Amino acid sequence: QQQVKQSPQSLIVQKGGISIINCAYENTAFDYFPWYQQFPGKGPALLIAIRPDVSEKKEGRFTISFNKSAKQFSLHIMDSQPGDSATYFCAASRETSGSRLTFGEGTQLTVNP
Amino acid sequence: GAGVSQSPRYKVAKRGQDVALRCDPISGHVSLFWYQQALGQGPEFLTYFQNEAQLDKSGLPSDRFFAERPEGSVSTLKIQRTQQEDSAVYLCASSLVWDQPQHFGDGTRLSIL
Image (cartoon, rainbow over all chains, first blue to last red; front, side, top):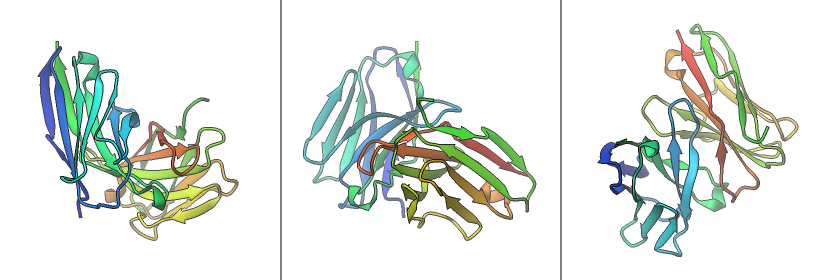
């Protein structure tokens, strides 16, 4: 059962553009939604995270939008840079279960100069 | 070191051999997680420790997989009688306590020939 579905699988944007990645989840018990960035040969690194009591969270160029009723959340990368080229994963967890993360399938982002 | 350290970075084994993968979490981190990441996929949960106690091992794919953290710090993931489908990157993550962000190591890439 795929509990977190992520789209698109790959994304190409121009430098300075906005990158948007979407995720949908099924388990309404999830209460923590992080986004991770992964470069080749490296482990995932936490970018930004949100809990369901807010609809939006912004940190620098990165914004999470959260829609609890639709069970969807998205990552927006403003002013995308070539250095942002990486694979992005959304994830979800139930903190009452020890915070094991359920990841989406990943989105490979390429930002062209 | 400041981050999660995993060793070896690469491991090649013949089918049927046993392997052991090591994780050194961030000092003082109580929670430790193991994930398996197949090529082009998101990480999948294997098991979770709080100190030396293994609280969740529901993600271990078979009884050939065994994890331990005897002193509540370093953890070892052991795979017995390896099979080709065990080829993947094995990621370790630690967090200060169960409801804090997880910090990932760079993983061990396991190849079974």
